[in-house]
Image 1 (cartoon, rainbow, N blue to C red):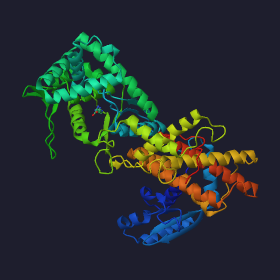
Image 2 (tube, rainbow, N blue to C red):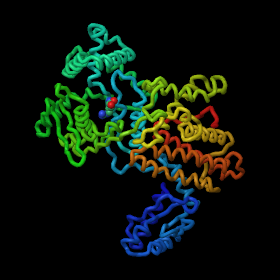
Image 3 (cartoon, protein in one colour):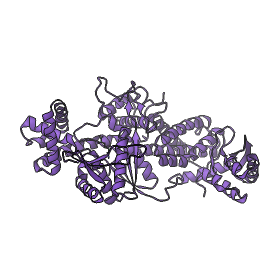
Length: 580
Ligand code: ARG
């Protein structure tokens, strides 16, 4: 049973190439560059011409004359220097699409060799409110988590909480400063703890002594001072609760809530291994690993700081060891700001030298910043850092503007509308993020990102809701989805577009680039609009045509829903609001 037009065509080409004694490596098709002239094209004859010292058009002609005998093919033409252009029979397209519709994965294949992947994303810090800088890691991380899972891999997402650095000592020092002791620590909530951190930050910037004290407390905390550990446990717990709430709203799921602190013992292990292998050396009181100077010299990795403590780098190295040994990870993907790329290059290279994660692939997916109109990191109106929660509320306010008030639409109460507002608002934020390539930064577009038209999350959600409404009306009129029959150009175009699904997901997976999915979702929703305008369902007299179109519509909806799911975006049943 054919589940992919492209695969079927590739097979047809491969067998012809084989019959003709041509290298099948070149027997691949791609979607035509000129959709007005053909559906697919194969450029293999051009690639073969040189090594075979033959005229490419002549090779193309040989291939074409065999293709012409294929019942699934309507037309073959040779264009330009030797492009083979193929137009498919409508019946062939329809039958593959019928098969896709019947398959719960729409024929999208799983990876041949599933792997165990750890995704390190989120990266929030204890006692600091999540801000707009944390948005991308959670949003991209979640999309990649879902894409990897859908591909058939086993995925473990780990939030890798920043809970072990000097900020911890700073907060404890500040509480002692104000209270005289840590006795009251366990009564403090997240706002109070954040306030301590803010004050500590100012104090440590102004006062060297305060900084030194914070540093000592951090070292003692790491060494296991029971009083500090107890107070710190509370800071961590309260922060995690607050962070979880934020991530729940964003629908970012984490399997593990481990932090830098959890790598403490493994860090000591790393030091032992480094000494044993002789890869570390003392430098100015610190224990370091020098990295290959090569053509791109890198600063050394610091295992133990000159004050005796563990820092950010060894913590990441030790975490790699744990992920390889305890979690049996085969791949680790870091979704972290691209300004940290040197850090990851250093850490990966050090891990290699230490031999702590043999065979584990490590990738840093570095993202660009979310900027304001001035091109600088997005700020609040008064120039402060934009909290993630405030950003979500801002988006909700925007969406609420175009929503009916409770009581205005029968059957939908205030709770329902508010839930819908949340799903649309978060969908808008996430889509705005994921429609950009990861490494590029983007400007947070305050005016248009939540609109129901244009390249936005709500536009795709709206397309789905519109099809839901078509499906409801069809059911009322006794129309059920039936076998696909192509009866006009728009329908043909839409079906061919849907048939690209597998390829799109494979590319997004391969490149770890969710924007490939958001681009496709957008064009698919647009293509559906043209189809529905040209091929009405309810008013169609021919019942078999109506049933076919209904099936195409339903499939579009199911595919769009899957695409939004992979991006981590909800698809509400109704939108309660017409597009502008
Ligand atoms: N907490 C870090 C920060 O705020 C990000 C952590 C990223 N993950 C990692 N494994 N280093 O910069």
